[in-house]
Image 1 (cartoon, one colour):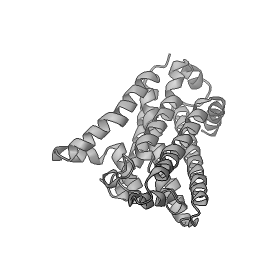
Image 2: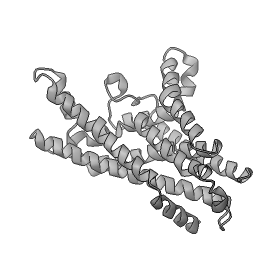
Image 3: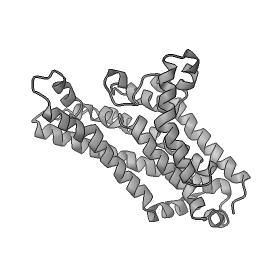
Image 4: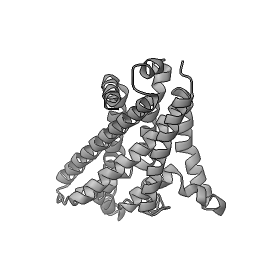
Length: 277
């Protein structure tokens, strides 16, 4: 297993996609969570009562919740793309045969891919968190505001939540890549579900009680509930789209872990049972 993981790490370092996805996500967090809100703050009338509240979420005291609020909707889609590329690219390049005939079992190869995918998602989440800290510090300095940083436990909880959400979405993308034997259809299905159907189901559940059980097990609902549990304002209170409080934080964490385990198990079963040409 160690050799399989080492091999996948080497492949990951040689491929440009994880780096591009990581840089894209860091730029998106900085832009949508800090830069654009700060521009809006700058052009608002000083007498506008919402101006002070907007600045407050951009300062160091709220950096954990602010950076994390981008994950339920936008970050989920980015990490799903990463997962699809981790497994689906092997079909596109016709390299599964080589990967599965070099020693490690099929189970070990798939598990190694998922482990390396989680490591890549973790590195991206940590980089985005560090960039958010820098952005908050710069805004505080420009506005001559005190840099009242949250406690270490709060920052670690924010990073941990970002890693868990990223890993869960990445695993779903990985199993879609295996299920559809490639990247194109897997990306289309994954993004359609993420950006369209999940939001539709969540919206309909407010008027159709029969859909409430479905909403509670959606990946987006669990991700948004974890973020809301760490202090980010929900979308109903003017927060970022995707941040909701449908589930309690412990239940939401269990749902995310369940997605990670089930996606990994399904990917292993599919690879073990299918012929790979």
